[in-house]
Image 1 (cartoon, one colour):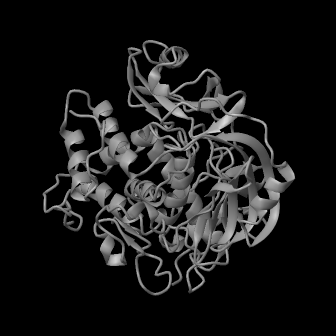
Image 2 (cartoon, helix red, strand yellow):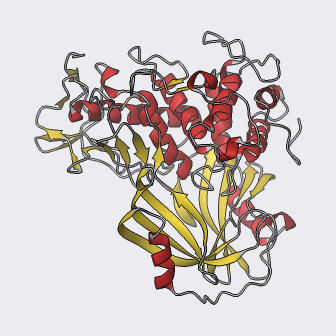
Image 3 (cartoon, helix red, strand yellow):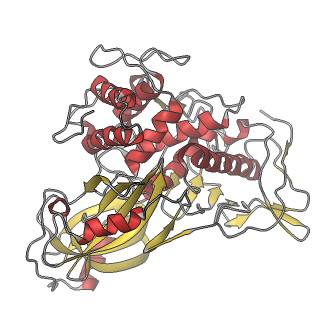
Length: 509
């Protein structure tokens, strides 16, 4: 369906460096200064090596990230053992403006103890093993020795290698940990996050964009967010022109697809700032290039870029929910602990996509808690329904099989939880949503719900799971509204309503 040409407002000037807050590690978003040095207080807690950190004699710590949100400071730390990075040794210390420790979230479940750091397998052999995990290999990024200390597992020395190529599911950027003593594969982590069938960028209508001007040439590059641009995936060239008028409303046009993609990214940045106090998608004023032209019914984020594909009609799927979801993976990646695990990564991204769609309030793509409702990817309508995941064949209720399910199917219980938290079982203007325990849940609204979700993500460690997210969201609600249990009780009721049971040591209110 053709639409009228899309006309945009210009933000004059070239891209400017974003303001940053200095920390011992990556920069974090600016925020109001607390009454005490909350980061120094967190450092002092870590220097005291409390038992909750599971610290051994050979452990050292490095502060890697700092975020400020809703009056709290979240300081994330990485661990080294005899100088080697420890995967699974990360933790987060939360302090308030009075310098008091509110919470400590630790991935590691026991001290490492004594472990040899001398490999018996060669690096060459380990890389060869890593490459065998893909069908085809186009390149090897890096290899290093690390300590793998998975929750509840004996720590091991390993080679960590990241390889690029194709796997069983298509394009792949895979990190492989190979035991440096036995040569066996300990674990793999796929960085290409797939979200088949979300959104469609040619429905956003006439929108305004912040573009970059250089002389008489304009480009689809954000002037204030580092690395945020929209490009032709085939050439990796940013779209440019002389009149600052972009696209023709035709969904098969890559430029039109880029118009909508950049629009969504900029709306999401505004949502992150206004609702969450976050400085752009990566938390320090930056994001990633968005590339339209993937020749698949798919879209993905891989840690370096967002790729946007098309539906079976050849229209590029850069809508509010698809781009919001894919950049949501990047936000997840750039909060403590990295991409969420244990079957949670897709529901986490869906919540951010839903918040982006809600904030944008675009009448051409109304806020509706459906995923892919506009794209009709293969002729079957939405691919996920947050208020009733079973409509797409996914489970509404959590079970022991959820974490091992295909990642998109595993999103069902988490999406249902978020919907109940935001809208309640009655829907509050959205569809009613039945609960797994027959209960009635009262929602807190999507803005409060995404604040709770985001502050739970700031408690995240590399050992994330559904069970941990129950604990973290309860703790986030308690931190955000001290002395008031309304949101805490809503979080708890929503998890109970999707059959995720209470966890040992979870907070009370």
